[in-house]
Length: 142
Image: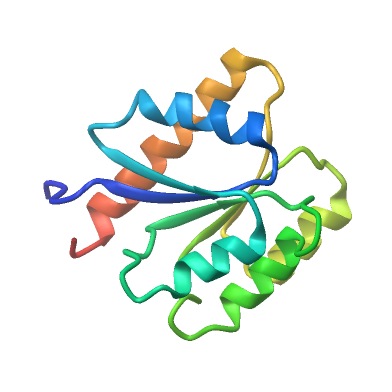
């Protein structure tokens, strides 16, 4: 099956440098991926509630954000019938087992620890894109 439209990703991260770095890496996939970014959990939920927003195929969500944490955002997403089926991948600097457990208990699809080395981060995002393009290609009607 061929992809009729690009994979749409929403990145939610309060770190401006992290968002910019991720955007640079995702730009290497710009023929297959469209990325939207939000700097806070509250902004992401507001963005997703706008009637003209095209919902993402997958959300990349940071955990440690001021105000509304990634856990709060994940809980809100999974409590909303319109948004609850969107896969949410946690992308966090945390390696604490409790954070991983809690994310999965709130129905995160996956948990990735942010790679600090640029080359490793590029590989991590490349693997993410490859996986989600494959999943979308083999299981999605789009």
